[in-house]
Length: 349
Image (cartoon, rainbow, N blue to C red; front, side, top):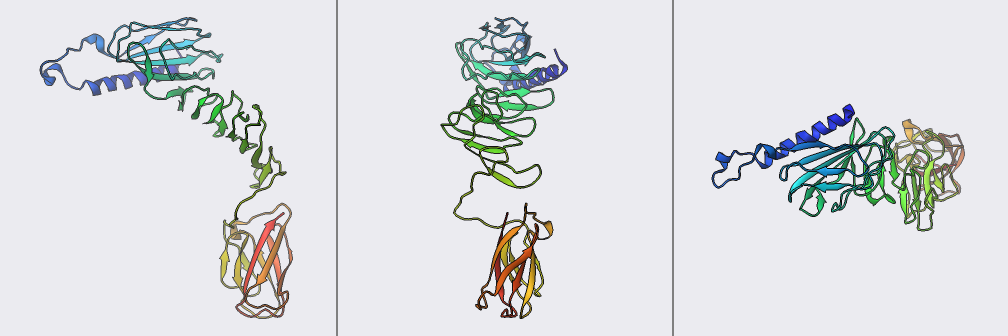
C-alpha cells in the first residue's frame, strides 16, 4: 500500500476510534445496571481486501465500525457484502493503482453511492450505515490525491483534486487542481451540457449553453480575456471572441477615481471613466483627465469621450480635443466661468 494511502487509512482508523469512544465513553460500572458488556472484539476494525473482479467485503464482527480498504488493479464488475450486522457503520477506502481508470460496482443494497474517481493513485472513501438490507451514506464521499482531501458528491468523476457539486457526471461543477471552476461533463473540462450549464477555464473563463448546445464544447455565449493579462473582457462564443454585445439596464463607472489637470480644476466626483470636476479659472483652457487616476487604465487604442458644462450654457462650451490610451483632453471655450461644473464620460475603443 502506498505511503499516502497508509496515512489516509491511519487517519480514518483514528476517526473511528474517536467515534467509538464518544458513543461509548463510560465503563460498565459507570453506566450502572442493566448494561451490555462490550467485548474486546467490538473495537473498530480495518480489513484489507485483496483485489479481485468480484471481491467480498466480509465483516468479522456485527456491531463495531468496520473499514474496508482495497486497491484496484482492474475493474470490479460486482462485489458482495457479508457478515455485517444491522446498525453497523461501514467505511470503504478504494484506491486506484498507477494506471487508474478502474471502475467499481458496489454491493447490492448500497444506495446513493459515489462513482469513484478515475484518477490514477487517487483514493475515494465513503461511509455508510447498514440496516441489515440496505446501506445509507453518512455523508459525501472524500477524494484524496496524496496531499489534499476534497469532497465528491453523489455520482460523478473528479479528474483532478477538488470539489465537485452535482448529481451525475453530466451536470455540476468542480474546482480543479489548477484552481479552475469547471463543468463536470463526461470528463471534458470545456464541454457544454445538453441541458445547460456553465464552465470556467483559462481561455473561456465563463461560458453558457442552452438546450441546443451540443455536449463537447459548443458555447452559446461566453466571456473571455481578449489577450493574456490584458484585463479586457471579450463577449462572444469562444475564447477572445468579441462578436457579442453586453446589455443591462445601466452601467456604473467604478475603479479608482480619475484625476484632472489644467483649468485650475478643483473638486472631482466620479469613477474611473466618468464623473465631474469644477473649474478654478474663467476663460478658455484645456483640461486633461487621466482615466482611473493614479492606478491607470489603458484602452486598446484610445478613449472616445463626451462632456458638458452644466453651469454655463453658451454654445459648445467644451469638447474633446485629444488624448491617448490613458488620458483624454477637453477644450473649454472662452465662455467658461470660474466654478463651472464639467460633467464628462469616456468609452474605450
